[in-house]
Image 1: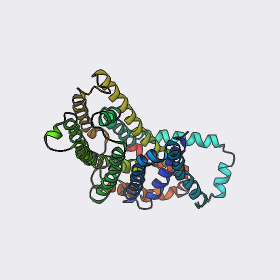
Image 2 (image 1 turned 90 degrees about the horizontal axis):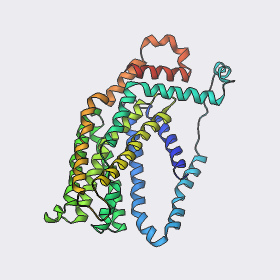
Image 3 (image 1 turned 90 degrees about the vertical axis):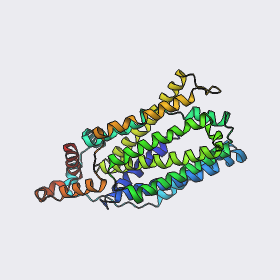
Image 4 (image 1 turned 180 degrees about the vertical axis):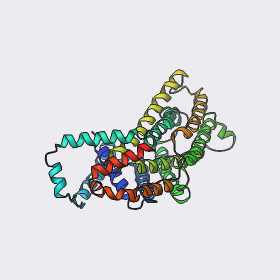
Length: 358
């Protein structure tokens, strides 16, 4: 139940962001995705700073009560939101008058399925899934290691989270300022290599080489978190922009949510795969002798998605892709179809077919 409400809100927000990005076909997706994820990072910074002290001083129940303030504010804001009603012609009213809502849902589902059949869409979705699922995740065992061996306090862990969100925002700004015109394939290539190299730094921590170099555990973990968050955001931002631009009119929220669900599912599989690897290698709470080897395996596997880029990710610039799409839409041969294009259902089907041709 706690996840249902934000899930519905995310779908609505994603659909609205994709719709508004079409007002500026060249830079709209980059600008709005950067803005939305920057605001999310800002909220994460505030939450991470307050989470630890609030739990210690107020207790879990009061923290949950305070956490309800955010959804209540969203509810109040939605009451005052104004939406322009869709103007439907008399012909369309007669056409859709007897259409049942289930038929409309069925048609939207079929159009969503047709959209996913487009090579540009499903290939990107496959790469997004594999890039996260191939490498194992060690979030749980890393938490045990930091609390048992490194003796980090909840306040310090909360501070790390706040710093992480801060540099996620920095990574968003860096991408938007200098890399938004970089082709997807090139951007993901260098970002994936960067993630593999940053992952190797955990070996220095678990083998305690950082102490021999005169770097304390706190400063080393803080620096590792900064590098990881910046590089990971440089990888995720082009994926968000690509997903936003692949959404045809009419199914923006559903398709974007489906693509993001693919990414989230791959991270869950990565966590399960990491837990299974730790079990095989005898890594558990209090036994971290082979943790460095597991980190090495993770770093090597992070390089595997690089060899799949040429098969699944288009080597085109986001701006070039959207400009080409606008040229196709402005083709004078389409003038004879103006009447049919007034129907959003026909416009959606036309967009889906154009994507499938790619």
